[in-house]
Length: 248
Image (tube, rainbow, N blue to C red):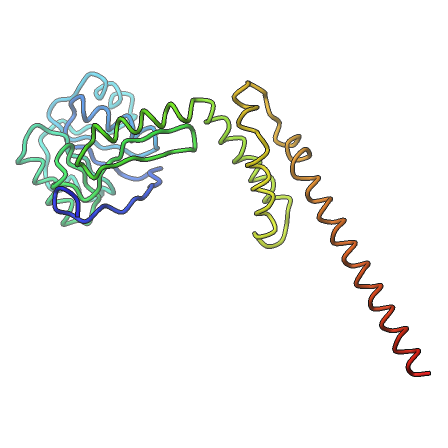
């Protein structure tokens, strides 16, 4: 059980592209939430009587929808994810109760007991994302761990992970058969020292890497298969000759 009396939350990454996110409140905290939601492709609806200049700017540019009034329970009806970031305990609690009634994911900022999901401290390098959470017990410690991870995985890891991802896709396109046939190739790529080459600023070409790392392994495997088939054929011939001799 967590410090707030709940069972530990289930870790999950969610694709938010095109999904409806409701943000109740439009201060600085809400602004940060909205910025992140937009980055991940969510369709953001903000409900608050007043808003920061940045939120108003996004609304005027039609990047988000802003309804300039107090929250009403009906606002939540089409939401997939809800954030409450107001200074009113009563409003925050009502948002959470409405979200629970509609089976919506809801996070009331800095109030773990009014959350059915939490937002972890996140270290991101392109497609690589490492989430850290203390279940709300020690967010400062989680943030410190995130800073440690950022030092451990510097900015060039974004490019490194991109290279690995594109090379993996190319292997899956070119190497047919069962997935188990490709596993040794993925392992070879991971052990090929590409991280150091990216760190040193080398511009890596995916197709050249395939020819350098993967193709030789495929050729070696094919030669092994040919030798195995040749040996099996020779054994069949010897067996046939032996049976013929016995028949005589």
